[in-house]
Length: 255
Image (cartoon, rainbow, N blue to C red; front, side):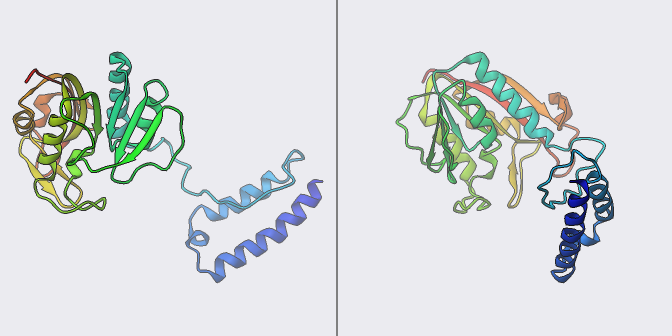
């Protein structure tokens, strides 16, 4: 069996390399490609090697650490913890990551609202299309709403929405409209000591600016990510267009 595998492997490797050469694939010039060839030859010498093998080079994963977005890691775990602690009857989420809404929907019924709705079928999760500046909810009806790393993008055209310099302001106002007094609002945005715009990636807010926009909310809890958790004092050290991600839990006060 091992001899048969090696014979087939040799033929497949010849065809594979020929295909890469004729299509000018960058894979063949990758510094890890020769090691890939050596590894599969060595692997197939094992008597327990599978008899059905496809060639699928993954050449960039031999790293000393796992790479991931720390901002999203910390903000989404923070949001999940808050939701688990508060245990709302339902979560209305505006545009947060698919992974976050998918996970929280498994312990709290969740409606995910997005300009590009998720095309998935999952018990506990309803996905609907809407824009954040014109939400399909009556005034003062929503008890729990989350929107992680979303509001800073509104009106910049990055995700197919219309250009609008007041996009984020309109989003905050619309959220304020639909939130019920006593309702919980979890969100995150880029934060610095001075507002700004990195077009068309995101806006950068100041805390004072947001507190003014949400004057009918009180701040319950906050988290400053640099991307490691830091303090509000660290915000004053940010230079240029650098920012932290500010995670905020706010509660709407009585009108």
